[in-house]
Length: 337
Image 1: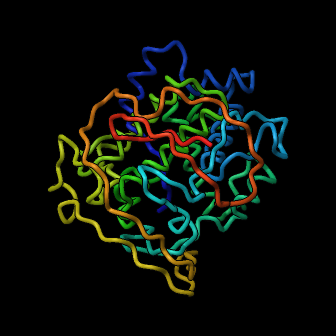
Image 2: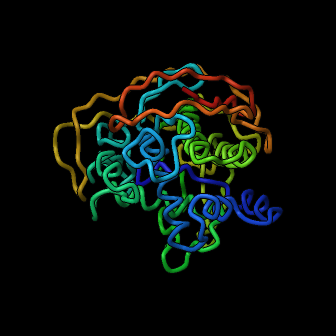
């Protein structure tokens, strides 16, 4: 899993951006960091992605009160939680506990928190982790990918490098066997991170719907998400719990889109910097309703009230999550504390 990239259908997002006077990225860079330049846009994306990953660590009640953030509580992608009534824990996919990363076409155990984990990011809010680490590469790809998603006007310029990672999100995630609730938890954390910086409900729903439609359906047709990379298979949610894309093309996917659960890793060191762990894999339920794909239908709650900010206490810290379940195209829930 070179990146669990909350990745996006760029064609859809570009159509939305074309109707707006300024992109989502430019809008909030100006609002939060004042000067809309490449450095500030990259800083905004760094803070957004880091918050989505590890939870609140900037703003009131944190050690970085001078920075924006914490307008709502964000558990973080690496924290255990509940989505669609299911217990979710994505940390094993990042920690090297599972052979879930696609390296040269083989399922491999890779530690993506080897750059200091959450502590490195909390110590330096604009850090992706130790230079040269798997963590740094993963988070850097996320900053770049979401920069393209959110329409940063300085994306691809000096100070904001273009995304050069994997073009097919299916290939990146093919050995993960992520189910619908797991993907939904990821999307929720992106939405909550945006809300924690003051993003509007409309902007959050636009991004959440795009993520859901692009990656949370099984056997979706090949499409080009990043210009210049060509049409690629993009379905991340290939588990049988995932709803089938109305325009499904399962024959285009290896083994007709069938995937297998990743095996636990052993206590050994793999090739190419891959590291293994004895941490057991989480067990997940397969009970998910099949739902129709409805482009443009809100999947995040339109009512996302502010919550009292809470100090973040460490990578994937246990949190008490109260799911506020809201109906929508994919039954996504805004998770608020």
